Image 1 (spheres, rainbow, N blue to C red):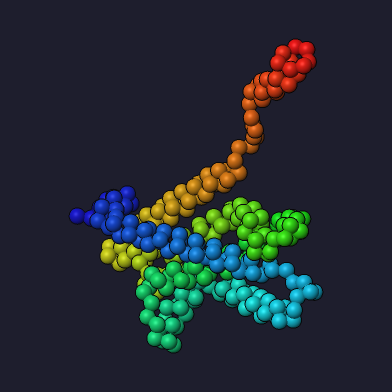
Image 2 (cartoon, helix red, strand yellow):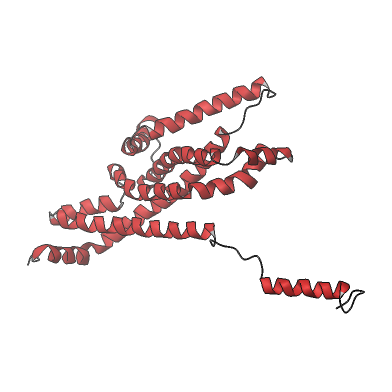
Amino acid sequence: MLPMGFWGWVVRILDEYGMWFVQGAGTTMLISITGTVIGFVIGLIVAVIRTIPESPQDSKIKRGVLGVVNFIMSAYVEIFRGTPMMVQAILVYYGLMEAYGIDLAPITAGILVVSINTGAYMAEIARGGIVSIDKGQFEAAHSIGMTHAQTMINVILPQAIRNILPATGNEFVINIKDTSVLNVITVSELFFMTKSVKGAIYRSFEPFFITCVIYFVLTFTVTRILRAIERKMDGPSSYVLGDPEAAGGRKRSAWLNFGGKNGTGKA
């Protein structure tokens, strides 16, 4: 007997195919989390290298190497930002197989594509975060003998990472949704599993409605968690360095010991 009405179909689909949606959502989160983390690291590395300053005192070899590296990294950023992820996925999965005989598992190819694509976007985001730090901090770090790498690790990156955290969270949310394009290389993510449910029951509206709700829950939850992390990193709006009364008591005790009843002064 067929279900009655929209909600009847929703209940039946969840009852019979609920685990399909769970499996698809799990694969979606696995790819998006892994791809975002790896892409974040790639972006930071590219941004740090692209912000290495050039000095007239540098040798021609160093300037030449930096020029070549910057050109390669700029090309990487522009190519992967300027082409659709779906096309990248097809090129990586089918292209590597046909051209070089490299047979990647679909989920491995998906993680690779999302990581490289995210790295291209994060490179520009991280570079903007680094550039936003006051130049005086670079000069101060260099004046005490820090190298560019030491300055980045100890002074600049901790501040830049905090500044780019909202944009990083936005990339994470985008990756959760954009994993849907990986169905073209048969990755069993949420969209792929939804199409499988659709093919099993010959209905579209109810399965995709459920998928919309799942995507919204995932992105909404991630957004709230990231905002909580941002507030945690910001710390309290006001800081109390010590108890004023306790501090006053210590000052009074020190005064008594030095020049009061126990000292040479008058109490």
